[in-house]
Length: 375
Image (tube, rainbow, N blue to C red; front, side, top):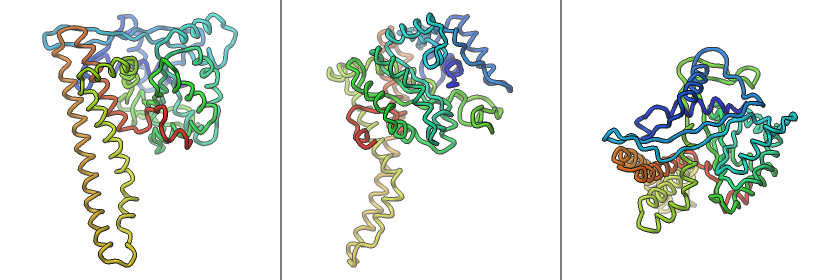
């Protein structure tokens, strides 16, 4: 169970409330809202988990994204329709042709696809069990019929994070499998795509709400409250990726703000990469330099200067990106039209994704990335 319904319920719970760190909220019809709220109550209460989606059950959810202004006006510039169905409809068909045909038809029409990868199955994949990729082959085949943008959403990230894994490591290990690599490569060259594939780690319950049980499959609740982690990121990425061409056009016509955020994100990723390697750099710079006392002095001085520089830059760039996000988020209440609200959301989501990508290197895989040739 990859937790699609649990993910939906956590997404709605996270975004149904206007929170200080988001700047927007989502709405569902009253009936749909009640359904997801009941699912979330089952998640948060002691006891079992919601039942998996039945093969015959196909449901559509329309999330309307809204902004509340300082004048108490509400603008709803866009909505996203999400089709929820059992993955077995595609990976293990049982003769229900009508359900499969409906899902396949929607895949062909969709502008974006979320491929949910179960974190527990990924953990087994990392230990040598390749069933995860075997199950994805029919999905990759169907993706050939679609022009959609693709996000791989890694669910139950709390399990993988607790085991010490990173997004970069998980992504690179998956790409070592030839079938997964070729399936992703097809998306990289999708002429209507964004020349990139995202790997987004999410936890519908947070890092400390549940642990993997003794059977290595079932999640066991510990108590406390769920604290959904990154569940809104795929929602934000959908809008940003769909608007990527427009963002580029706007940047070419006097909108340096987005370029500046992107540049800071690249610098921050580089600086943090250097910071991660600091123990190795520190050891290298402090190695005795031949027999020359002068070279040893220079190397010692260089080590101190370089280490201070990297630490200062990492903090400065991190603070600057946080300032950008806060400034863009605070601008939302000043919107006077749906157009302004939409432009503000695009800018805000772009900045938030820059922050997210800096925190999780490897979460966006770009065509031509150097590591592609080394996988």
